[in-house]
Length: 285
Image (cartoon, rainbow, N blue to C red; front, top):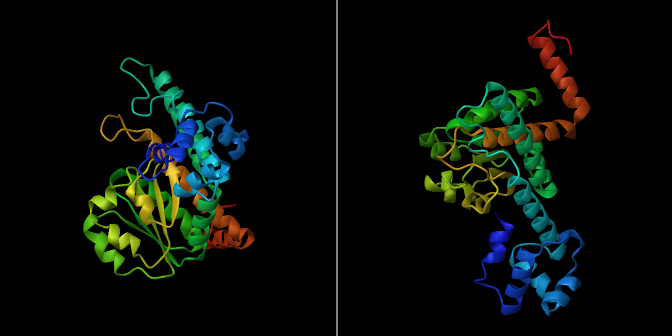
């Protein structure tokens, strides 16, 4: 969780702001219809209290905070009614049952990931990738394997993608990054690179940075300039496999590629056709 965690952290809030925060946490109606005036009447505070609370939490005002709360509560509600991402099948399940559960899990996680997409964050990410000369992806273990498909797709846009998976190479690569590059950091926990003491390097990176991480408050988000989230559904060790997170990351990378492609659709389509014709005479588009 991100927004609800912020609302529960009352350390820097006034008594009236705490009252409004508690009201928003417990509110069960259609929050998209809730106005600052409605909140002031229900909590015996002023409408400006709600606006101040929103700004203290890092939002432009009540409308942006309201949208974030709606997204998070909707996500949490749906997560409670879906197949367990950690154990999507049990001992004794038939192969047909297993196949059905994996299909449902992966379909649901794509839908949930799409619900977590924020227009402004996606727009920034697409702009960074469209204008850069080279892309660097920092990822560990199994997560890195997913990125090779994105690397392959980006070759049709003639965007070189370098995937860095070896922690011994991380610090060295940072010395070669230029202003017109773009870095993508992928970490489900959001703590991977911080545990490797790379926080200062990420913060001071000379080029635009994008994080893909679990939907919860974590340190990687505070270090990067654009943020894309995947559903926070898996436990680190207590799971059969990272079915959900892998599918969500793959989906986001596909979305990024598709959006970058669409920026210059006709030109990029012709680039792809020319590339295919030169490298594989037998393929027909």
